[in-house]
Image (cartoon, rainbow, N blue to C red; front, top):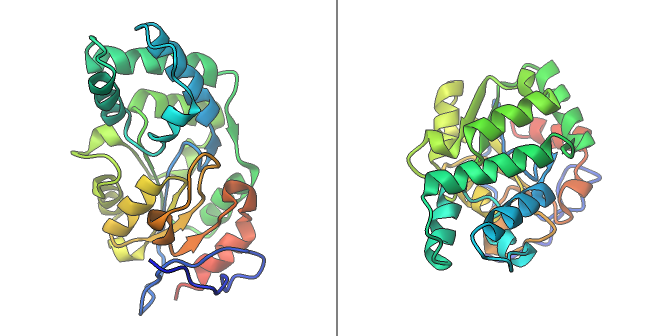
Length: 248
């Protein structure tokens, strides 16, 4: 997809617009990814996975490998790693081990991005229904929401394990829209991975993309309706809310 030279109509965002749509629909609900979008967690996951795979003799796990799975469902990731590196362990035990290590790390080192916290507050005050749709396991999501005290914002909380297929399939976003009782075309997804952007567009939803620093910006990200090339550090709550309100 060719890049459009125009900047966002929301002043202050030096961002690239994606393909957009011929006729805009009103945004009536917002669906958030968790890791890398609301919370700074990729380094936590990297360390948890490094410890896990070291237990099985794979000591070369690094950010380059980890970045391939950002936005991927945890189960799908373990299935791929098990096959690729010939790990002789059940998927269930691999997931349990990863969750155990992650929980130990996350209790001491989980940070909510400040502008995302402000964005949640703005949406909450203006009565937008909100959903969380994460590739993490239900147990990890529950723990993180407790640690960060973010649960109060969400009417719906979903894990990739709650649907048939994880991102980049649209299942989790479509399920979130159904539970929020909103049509997909009236939903906005906020995502940091190209898998998430692809899933959002397959679901016919708006998407704000905040690429993780580890990820190259390719055609998948260019599908987003608002692409902030510098990721979360470029995100401003009031500017994002103004952009959302323009979708009328």
